[in-house]
Length: 355
Image 1: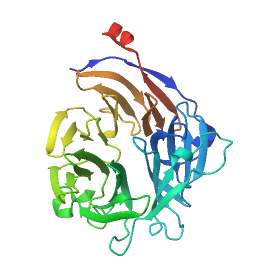
Image 2: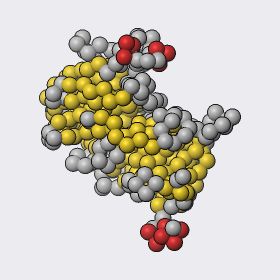
Image 3: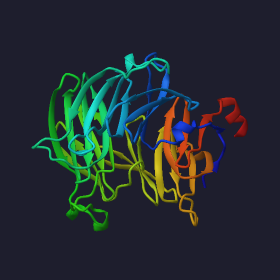
């Protein structure tokens, strides 16, 4: 049995009406011009909105003409925001592009107009890389270079690698799985391939590893050796995976969560309930799952697991969750119904008293 504690304080957040009135498709944590922590949300109308930890709306800018479907910020060595979206309403797929924004010159002051400098806009598709619906997206730093993985509905992954800002890059692709690799043919798309639901990177021994997951298979691909490794014969839905500080991939399945390194599967923890979202925060694993035997399809439980000490550091009932953003030393949870709250870890003295 896992011991249960309440090592986090929960604070309700007031969500601005303007934020509620917009459909936000994607989110990421990041930094603004002065290094101030901020959350970025990408919308169905192509706008990027910056909010602080209290969900106060700060600056915004138009990133794509149609919609923003994927977003990620790099802050370790360079302050770059990557957006993936559509720019032509008459040809949304063909116009899908990756844009790289310089966030060092993006002011969070609402009165300062204008977007950050656009460093580069990269087309994803070409005759050698046919158009497909994008289902996942991930960016990583590889020394002085950048590497981008774009997961597609057809089961392929497109790789852009090199000096992306100066458009000096190489392009490649690999196939994760075909229908023959899939045990559950109902999970395949109309093109007979399972969609890529999750992408993640791992740097290991000068090799760049791409974890690529569908609903029916978990794989790792070594970009240097051009070698694919099948790690498991099951996968997960979008948002049901996370990456630990040690670059392990965590995949949430109905019966358990599984940890993976490039060589294969590692630890496994049996948590009941269909998983809907996973996130890693300060060594904790956050799991949003459907409660067992619930008749409400939108009911969820949010649990914060301390796997090392075999305890549940926090748990609460929530409604359907749209976004989980870990930043500012807190976890911000935004519900599909427009509600939101923040979790802040208690100090060591308070936790010791509870123990």
